Length: 347
Image 1: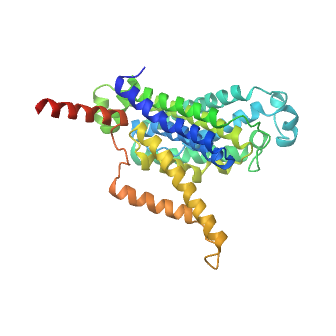
Image 2: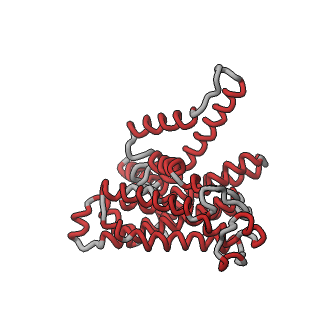
Image 3: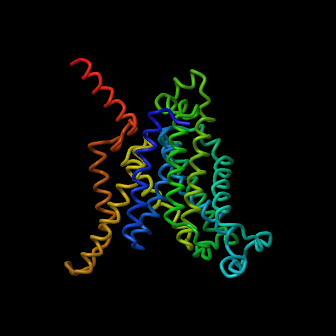
């Protein structure tokens, strides 16, 4: 499936996930396990965004909307029948007696998210630059409005509850490793190889016969599939949520992870997810400690968001393409070995 350089990249990128699993086992701390599980789910979401945004060069705000689609679909399908009367009093009769396996529901949630993306996104893939960004944001607004207004399925703006909890660190880590493999495979697939020239020079790629809209559409559908699976995993981990969980705040967190790490590389997406998650949790712990010690007369609010935003601005000033701009970690190691071998032969 992979060339040698991509196999090296895959092995190196799953090492942090495996180390995270080991740390959870050693620490045996519920809070750390929760943080690690959220990190693996976020990693899957970031990789899904990288599949489309990193290869097409188009910023997509709608990604988190498809996360919501996956979460609600899997929740409705897996919710125990006795809970549906309380959680979804207006639910359609055809779904009242449906109770599928949570694992099957997670898969269906991802597929439905991909189907929705495939149905609505093709006309949008004809757009580029600012127009594409604006329409992706409009699509996020549409998806959010549907989640808020479709009370029969989502319980409207109220909390959606009763989802069985099946997602643990092992399931989330397994999906995260699968997402790394899928992102690398897509990058080296025919669609990925054709999509990147479209990103670099759309007119030249189109003149050479590249079907721009089709290539972007394929990347967008796979991205939505990964977002839907990530949302379904998250729903079966948190067990209760509302439409606001799939709107602007989460959108900018996932975008921040990808932009900081480097949107053009899978390695950057993985690095950004780890860096931002641990920075976010560290800042939140610092804010809680300051408030507990009552250092200031009034509680400190928003320190986490402000510090993280300032750090992001500072990093992007010096590295506008992210920490890992264009080269995967496996390629870096191979090129370094080649240079060392060349120097040895010269000597």
